[in-house]
Figure: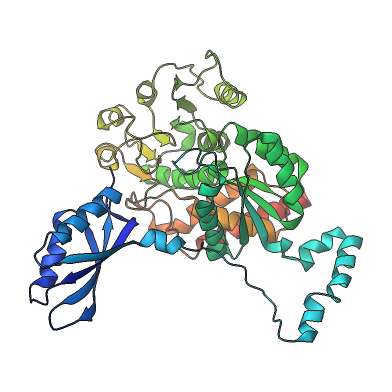
Length: 463
């Protein structure tokens, strides 16, 4: 179900005849093959020709070729060059290191580096806690991956994961002023990852685990939390769970239902699904039914890993078996973090009145949102081209800002739920079926989440 969007944005430079109809011919050609024109710039003009940059959103690399061919087919038009604007943004990477202090003369150098820096080193050696006050540690987070579960691309390795981790670090800085740095590890051995992150930890005040495949991610996070004195947060689990819980709280307000009376179906029991289930259970829903590729999760199933066994023991109170379609019948809420095109409008029709459907598989959801809207009262996706986008950027920058401000040493479910409530509260009186979570660009979100998490962390420390 790909549609043209800025993720596939191209700029085509063409030579064209200087006729009165040239602009119309060029834009019409782009439109006829489904491109969405976003800019048209004449960059050169001569007596016998003009040079034009045409910028358009397309659906795929093949679609970009179709647009190029359509332009080349016009009389007197020649395509000079096609630039992919996404690749241009990534040239040379998206991050840089910039000093916070001036180094203008010998005096500055003597204080920032030798000999003055030696006194600061001695102070930290005498009192290690001073590292938070006198170094970058106080505001720095490691974004750690092994490249084993990157976006929807799978196990593509640490080098190919780096553009995503750079983007994550840029979001930390943009939305919360947190200095984050990619740490892409060339190993997928659980013990080696744990050992390496432990060795790197003195530089950082927090660790954001990212795109590490389940079930290894569960053990890595749990053991690092035990061994480190800084918070460790696996965003694929907890960032998703925070935003889902915020969206669900507001969606149930729209349909006037109490979660304690709702049966919730969760499709996908990997990192995100398991974390969603764990936070959901804190809200005492009537029941949660988990479904994976092998069907409904229940205690009678064989061959389950420890995570699945935990889910089976804490969900599905009625002992249901069968498929996702069976689970949906009579459910109030569907939350999907699994795979595309798993069901259709006819299955939504079997749910309870005014069902809530969160189809979050990306880029293609478990059900076409247009189909879901035939029967669902509220629909959310992970996509930016539909209302109610469930996006982790609503959570993780503010979460870490709050943790860093509190100088927290760990993170727990109370802090996660505080973050979820803060996201939900930002919507306030703007709530409706198409607006259950705020925009990722809403400047109120990160500060609200940060304050909620900071307060929860401080309260826990005092308690």
